[in-house]
Length: 121
Image (cartoon, rainbow, N blue to C red; front, side):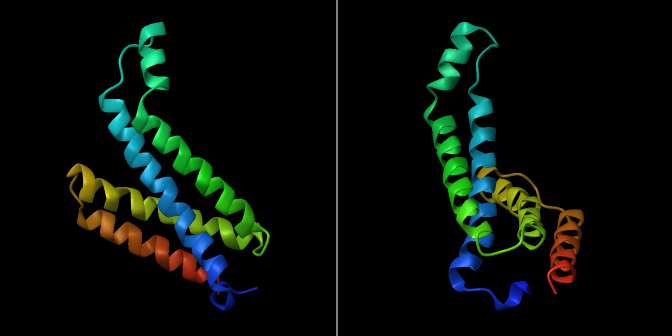
């Protein structure tokens, strides 16, 4: 089965799951800036942190979408799309956290996307 002949709903799952996971990573980073100590009080505050709860909810939603996506696509094909998180996380970090993007990032992202094309064709 080639990735290029998939139904729109499957494409949605293949692309949107890495976006949800990447967004969760940004929220984890934001949570880490407000994390206290590794003691009872710090852990209690962490568990109640709304940013962490949002990140976990996105991960949960991404997992549910992924499970339904895997009904239609072999894991060997689908899992290569998870590599998109390595493209999206730095991009989102630049957009939302002000982190710098480098030419190495662009080259790496191009290699990842090129690899996905090779794997899925």
